[in-house]
Image (cartoon, rainbow, N blue to C red; front, side, top):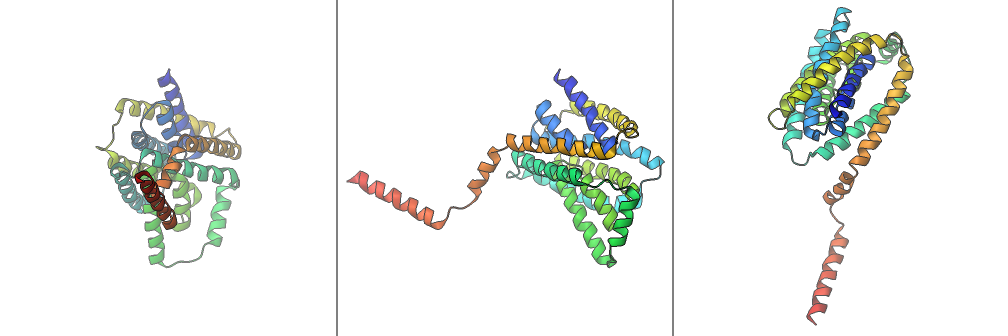
Length: 294
């Protein structure tokens, strides 16, 4: 029964990618952990493979519609791939980055994504491209490349550590930094997600246990879901769907933060005590010791 529920939810991952062009990782990680019982680090690694492959499949209709700028995909994708590999290596090997820490960061990103989706204005792609083009100023080539590198590595590290594809950050970066039209940015972002998810997965490979049977099952069912999502996108109001998904993410982030509330208590152990507190405790121990002697 758990497998049936899990595979049904895997279809929902694909539907989310087909309808919204993102959100796959945000659904995949909690499903693998809380429904299928996979450990946090393994779930993040598996979600990278699942969402990366499904994003690549989802890019096919955009490629046919000529909505993918491969030049910009490889320019931005090269930096995100580096960041994703480094982030995954750090998450897999650094003891401080525990599964609970990763889930708290993951929930925080879900919260940000939820607020952005709820507050986002329903503006057409052409209008948004015109607004961005008119408000952007000319920058030197060196400064632009520096921004591309920093933002790409940052998004990649986020992918590797937390397991999200980073579509909500990749699309604005493509539009603002590489002047990619909005339609092209959506299709191009799927290629970039596939690229940094692949390197992020390689960063985890050999350090975490992977359930290949579960991963392949999720991959196949999510691939079916993405075509359903593309079809449903013709009939569903994008504005209402976006807001509904935003409120769903809000509820999920609160749930994950509640489930990992003990991690906030653990953070206090890394904060040094004030000097007067240490002195007071030392004096108290000395007084008790002298009293016991007498």
